[in-house]
Structure formats: structure tokens, C-alpha cells
Amino acid sequence: MSGVLLADRYMSPMTEGDLDEVAAIEKIAYEFPWSRGNFGDSLRNGYFGVCLRHVTGTLIGYCVLMPVVDEMHLLNLCVTPAAQGAGAGLALLREAVRITRAEKLEGLLLEVRPSNHRAIRLYERFGFASIGRRKNYYPARHRSREDAIVMRFSFASEGADGAA
Image (cartoon, rainbow, N blue to C red):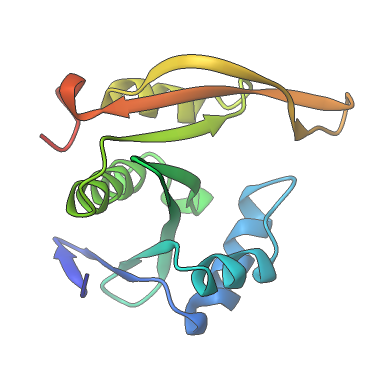
């Protein structure tokens, strides 16, 4: 994957040189962020990292994907709060599907907090279906833990907004 131009944005592989910016956005966007080291470990372990930038070079969002047996696991998808609602999350999901297909895997799996209504709507609109729940998966501030909704995107059931 080289830089792919999308109107006023472009995607490129995440590299070690991106990690300071990625970690800075992660801290702004999430109450319990991944560390810079988590991202670095992911890249060193051969996971796929994707950066989405504005043509000015400003990082807008990113995602990290891990191949597991016959499907891809979307470990992290984040869009800077200032760019949310403008299609960046959808563009990253489409790239995740493109990579998953290129790797000849059957689908894409993710976990999302039940309290993250905006992300759930995006995933459902894209064609992800809820397939289960992981109890006490995420740390939470006002309770000990928060469950995760497990969602899967299968190429056999792509939605209208999916990357078909």
C-alpha cells in the first residue's frame, strides 16, 4: 500500500515515524488510550497500520489491523475529534476491507464499547453485524469494567456503504 489520494485526503502505511502523532491523537480521543509502545509493538509484529492524512499532511485518523487465521481483527480505529463526522472513519473502514481482501481473508472482526454509539452506528451502516459480547472487556472510569460488543463484517453480507 502506497499513498492513496482521496480528494483532500490520502492514506499511507503507518510507520515508526508516525507514532508520536498517532499517540497524541489517541490521548485526545480516548479516555483509556493505547500507548506509543502499543502501536510500535503492533508494527514490529507485522500488523497493518494505516494513516489517513489531509493533503496538508495533518494526521486525521488511523487504524491497526491484525490478521488472525482466516479473518482480520480491527484492533484500533480512531479519527481525531475535529475531523469526526466527515467520512474519515468510513474511508478507514473501506481501506481495512481492501487490505483484508488483499490478504484473502474472509471477514473483519472488531470490538466496540456499548457506550460508543457513534462508532456502533458507523459500523452498522457499513454492514457490520453484532455477533456477541465480551464481558468486562474495557476499563471504565465510573464502574470497574465495560463490556465489548463483538461485530463482524463478512464479505458475503456487505452493506450498501461497504467496500463492495
